[in-house]
Length: 397
Image 1: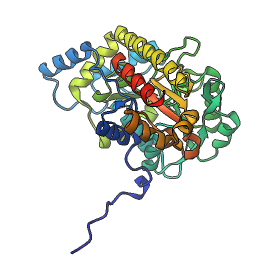
Image 2 (image 1 turned 45 degrees about the vertical axis):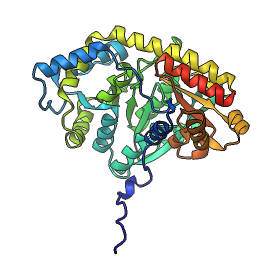
Image 3 (image 1 turned 135 degrees about the vertical axis):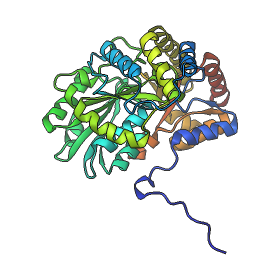
Image 4 (image 1 turned 90 degrees about the horizontal axis):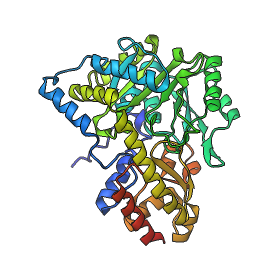
């Protein structure tokens, strides 16, 4: 009898394993937990989107889309960007439709980063960033966001030290997942100045661009700053804006010389994205402003439900200015119930309280930096949030 074959995983991907989102959602399903871990809404999304996609299917839009995306959606993205972030883009030469923002990130890294190039990454980071850099053969250089008062921000000296002669790109995410920080103009100017000084590309993940709650902290795209349009890739999608995460319709907006690299990778990663869903997405971007405002208002109301409940249970909550996540320090709660660290607490909450959350240490290179935090998603229906609060109070109160 021969031994069972061992899993064969390329060395560059061995450190990553299964994503923490999949792990926690599986555990939540096993224990019937309210899932506040993975960031997806639990409602079906706007009827306007459903009807538009169905019309597109019935009208025969069911074959391969062009590599850059259907022309209608590229024009809609161009108009959306001009209205929302003040960036003019040529729909034919500067916009590429991708398999969600995740697909745009992968295409950008693989298409523009050479082996040995360094990429500055702010941590905590969305977990695909590290894997995308690894697949491109790049080397990450980390800058840590830490609490300063009521929000997370970076140390300017650490940021400057992360840039060097091999730096090719900096990966910016604002509004920021998981901390909820919306970068200020001053913070973006510091990043932009280093990009100009070192001739570095900015990869700007802006999927939460509309999900902001504080009028004093508006979303600003780094592409709109002086000297940055020609060196910035803006990445976004309809998933967060319109509660349609399963559609996986995203885009990359970049000057033509950077778009060439993105498309060079995209053509072999996905080539074409679901045609009728692209048609539906175009309708949402053109006609869905009211739906987007309602979604933001709903998520803000859910934040106002969950935040005080967590505080009353002993969590130190950092008030998010954007996204649909709450980052909270859990030390007081963990000590009370006798668990250590974010991973153990999240497993306890899922199995004992039957409420799932995410352990943010998965988003840090130094796991100890994130072990005292926990992340809750509040992009859920009111009854879901209410039930989660009821269970948390019963288990922790």
